[in-house]
Amino acid sequence: MFELPLFPLNTVLFPGAPIHLHIFEARYQQMIGLCIEERRPFGVVLIRSGKEANAPLATPYRVGCTANIIQVQRLEQGRFNVVAIGQERFRILTLDADTQPYLIGQVELYPIRVTDPKELEQQAARLQHYFKKFVAAVIEVSGNAVDIGDLPEDALGLAYIAATVLQIGVHQKQALLEQTDAAMLFNQLLHLYRREQALLKAMILHGEQQDDAPYSLN
Image (cartoon, rainbow, N blue to C red; front, side, top):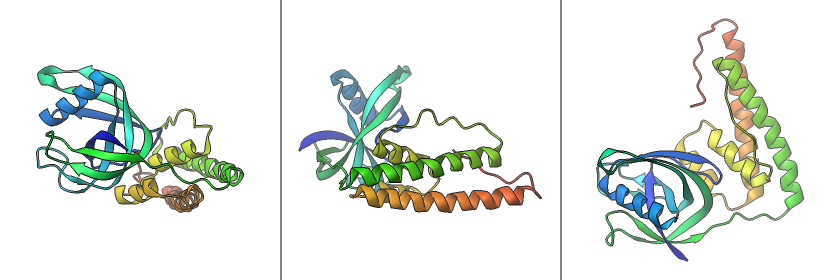
């Protein structure tokens, strides 16, 4: 168990995924400034209830992802632009909303269960196939180039990047982040990618008659 400053947001961060933040509120200027100074991570958690900014502290979901700051741009009035990378899942055990103007959690790391590494590699190969077909279909529908960079070589890294790219609601993404079993996570991702690919295929067929069908990966 360890102490972690928490940043409740209307987004879900997965291990290995980048997050870009503009820090303008005084409470988070203080929090991020401390993380930069002490070279420590903070925790990104999805908001369960409340608002992201200029409001009382939001109530977060109990499972989040640690974030390590890799790039900082200092701006006027103490503001920051930061880029951070998701690292490890954690689970909040207790919350402290009184000691600091931001939330502090007593947390524990929450690694996903892997029971059959060989099966996981097979599932990863299938997911990579669907992922690449999905990106190719997005490019065909949108007409825009999509740079996904180099895919992770490890199975779980691929799963979390695939979850990041999916255009689904944040609560669905939170359910993926909270999944306790790796095989089940892959099953869910494969189902979602088959569904999204079918939808994109339908859009492509429709686009033969109507070229302005809207779609965006963002």
